[in-house]
Amino acid sequence: MRIFEWNRLLYLHSNLCRCYKIFWLYIMSDMLKKGALVPLCRIFVIFGIFVAAQPQWSEGTDLSRSRSALAAANLSPTVLASVLTKIDAAPKSFQRYLAAVLADRREDPLLLYLVDKGNALPEAYTPTDLVPLEGTGLSVSRTGHRLRKNAFQALKAMDLAARTEGVTLLVSSSYRSFAYQLEVWNRSVAADGLAETEVSVARPGHSQHQLGTAIDFGSITDAFAATKASHWLAVNAHRFGFSLSFPKDMMPVTGYKWESWHYRFIGEAAASLENEYFGGIQHHLLSFLDKL
Image 1 (cartoon, rainbow, N blue to C red):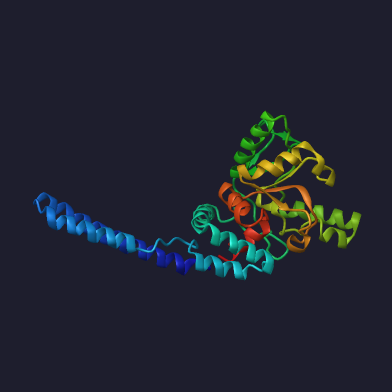
Image 2: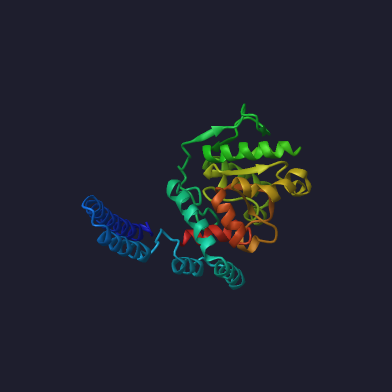
C-alpha cells in the first residue's frame, strides 16, 4: 500500500509524543503533591512549548503532500491552478475537510475508490453489506434493487428530505454485479454499436454500480435533466454525500457522456471537499485521492 510507510512514521511519532506527555504529567503530579509550585509552573511552560512545537501531522493532510498528489493526478493546468488557488485561500479548511475524508477512507477503502476506464474492480468483487430497497419506503422501479448499507442510509435521509419538498426520487438502477454489467454492455453493443457504447456504458469491472454505492434515478435518459427530481438533486444531493459522476461537457475527463441521473455516494465530507475545492467534479477529487 502506498501510504503504509507514512502511516508507520505517523504511528511512531504519535506514540513517542504520547510517552513524553505521560512522563511530564507524572512529574508534574508528583511535584504538585510535594508543594513545589514554582518549579511546577516552569514545567508547565516547558510542556506547553513542547506540545505547541509538535507538528500536527495526519495522513495526507499536510499541504506539501497534497500539492504533490494534485500534480500527479493528471488534472488539466487550468483545473490544477484553480484547486491550488482555493487551497491557498483557505488551507486550514481544506485540511479539515481532507482529514475527515481520509478518516472515511480508512474506515471504508472502497468508498472513495477510483473506478473509471483505467481502474477496474475484480470480477469477483461483491459488497458484503448490500441492503434490498423494496419494502423500505423508497420509490423503486422494480424489485431486486440493492445498495451498500451506508449508501442506503444516506439515500433514506435524502429521500425523506426530497419528499418534504414534494419531490419523488425514483431508483431505477443500483448495484450491478460484474456479470450483470457484462449483459448491459453486450446489449448496448448489439443495439448501438461499440463506439456509442464506449461513451455511454462502462465495461464490466469498470462500472461504479459494482461498488454498490451508485444510483441511477428516474428515466435513465436525457429527459431526466428537465425533471423536478433532477433539479432537486443538483442542488441538494451533496448535503447527503451524493455526487454526480458524469457531469455535462466533461466527457474528455470522465470518458462518458453526460448522465444527469447517475449519482455515487462518496460521503458528506468528500462531497463537501469536492464542492468547495474541486469545482463539483467527482473525477477530479477521486483522481487526487488516488494519488494521495
